[in-house]
Image 1 (spheres, rainbow, N blue to C red):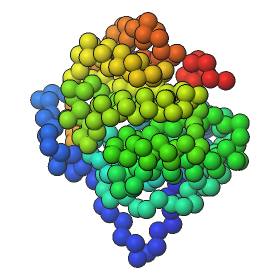
Image 2 (cartoon, helix red, strand yellow; image 1 turned 180 degrees about the vertical axis):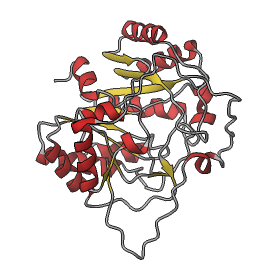
Image 3 (cartoon, rainbow, N blue to C red; image 1 turned 30 degrees about the vertical axis):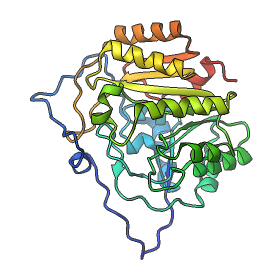
Length: 322
C-alpha cells in the first residue's frame, strides 16, 4: 500500500504514464501478436466481491492508501482482499523505470513522505496484520534507492506491532548497492525478497535499466551480511523463456544462497505491455517445483496464479519461519 503525502498546491505532480505511453520510448519496441493467445481453463481470476473485499477497499480509501495489488493490476486482488490481506507499496505510486511487463505508472516521483513510516505503522495496527509485505516502486532518483525509507518503515511498524512478521520486496538499488545495504542494516526484515522476474536473455526487453548479474549479487551480498534473514526471489513465465533457461535461473539463485522461490504465469495488463507468448501448463509448474526441492530450496511456490506476495505468510511458515 502507498500512503500518499499531502501535496502543497504549488507542487506540480508529473503526468503518470501507463500502457503504451509508458513503454513507447523503450529501446526494444513491443511487437503485438496478430491474435492474442486464448487463456486456458487453468487460469482462474477471481473477481472482487464480498464483505471482506469491500471492507479492505473502504479502509484503503478512507486512509488515502494504495496497494501494489491495485497499482500493478494483480489478478489475485479479489481473493487477497477478500481474506483481508494486501501488500503495501511505499515511496509513491510512480516508478522511475518503464518495465513493459508491469502496470505501475512511470513518471517523475514526488519526494518521500516523512510521515509515511508512522502512517503505515498505524494502518497495519488497525488491520491487525500478523504478516506484512512491503514493496516499492524503483526510485533511481534517490541516493540510496529508497533503502533508508524501507528501514524507517520497518522500525515504525515494529515499534507499534512487534509481533508482525515483515517481508520486504525490494528494487535492485542498481549503482547504490553498498549504500543501500548499509541503510537497510538499521532495521532488517524477516524475509528479503528481490525478484529476478525473467531469464537473462530477456532482460533488455523486459527489464530495461536492470542487470541480471547485479540482481543476483544483491541477493548474495544481503545474505552474506545478514545470514539470519531468509532470502527469496521469483520469476514470471510466458515471455518467451525456455524451460531449460528457467531451470538455470533457479540454479543461479541457489548458487547465490536464495532460499525461497516463486514462479507464476505472466498475464498481459494491456495492449501496451509485452504479449503472453505461452501459457505454462500446471504440470510444467509441478516439474519446476520438484526441481526446486531437489536444488535445496526451503520452499517453492510454483503454479500459474502464484505471485511473489501471494499467500506470503503461508509460504514463509512452510519454509520454516515461526
